[in-house]
Image 1 (cartoon, rainbow, N blue to C red):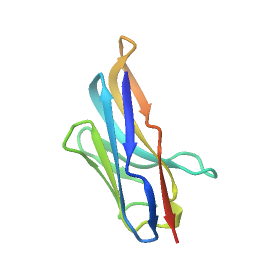
Image 2: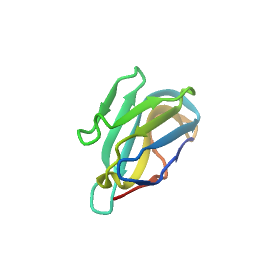
Image 3: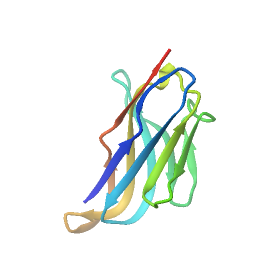
Length: 123
């Protein structure tokens, strides 16, 4: 089994910064991508930022230049540094891990989501 846990959400004023962290654990044989998504009650879940095992990154246009995704010192961790936050960044942020891992005794390509962490930016 593979588990994903996020941390670091909270309340911040417009223009402030927050850092989200995500850790994947369990029987992971190869980690392909780690990504952050976000969702509000009025929108579908959307990709915010993604990093691959080779270090390539991709960002949503709305956050490029303000957010930075980076891998942690531990291989199975990823961070999202969010600067110059705006009220429209308010959402629940989810970490997603794509990996080759153990699924009930079988090696499979897995897509695992964390439980989400709330980010609220107040004006």
